[in-house]
Image (cartoon, rainbow, N blue to C red; front, side, top):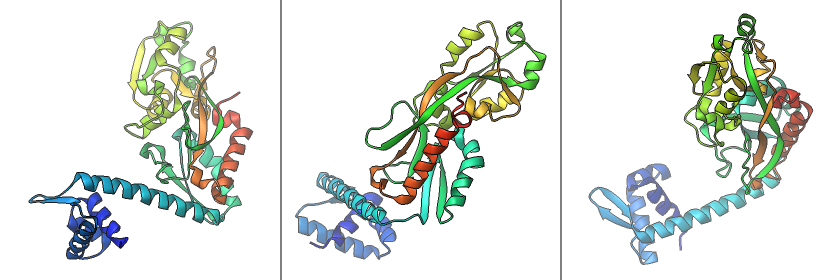
Length: 312
């Protein structure tokens, strides 16, 4: 059997047409047709039904493509493991990280790491794009979750804290405890209570990764008589609204404490939210540059829990 026949068949199956497969493979369409016909004759089954609107994969074809994809994935994993076994510090490391940490880490720690290892090139992928570790779209993921996946290698970095914030100006003009009716509570959407997962945009991605205490419970505990103010959809919008004197609201301490215009509201204790995890795929366990960045991040979170986790 000519193994190239699998390549032509896979290109047709995934692209949906001979013409598109020919473009992907860089050959003439007649070559694709000839190799596909040859593959079907060898197997003794029809892999596609020819119709006026194009090719329609048959049940037998669907079974073959599923098995071919599984073999290709396993071969790819073997290739990666062999490559990573002999890889050194030189090369890229792609990382996705919850935006709530980006300002602190980018302004302090990643610059230090890059200076230590100039031959290593960091590439940052926004978390709202939901890069897939299983598909090797990134090498390291730093996120917030209480439900870590079992099939990935994970390291717990700590636990986020959050509390209620307002601007210095807002607090100087109002007293939320004495006259709560003069203040406004900035309400966030239900994403604040969600489990980490797909989100609609960048702000929502941050929100779902932070996992704050339910807003209604927090408000009823401390500010039951305070009127509702603006409702915002996204953590960064909430930060801007609080900074803009629109009211008071909860934020992760790593975000609120780093803003010089904000202050923790006296009388409200900080509360713990979800754990911060760092994940890699098992295939990468022997990649030296990934190990180096993992060790650096672990040490950074261990040395600076106040700045990165809001712990006091």
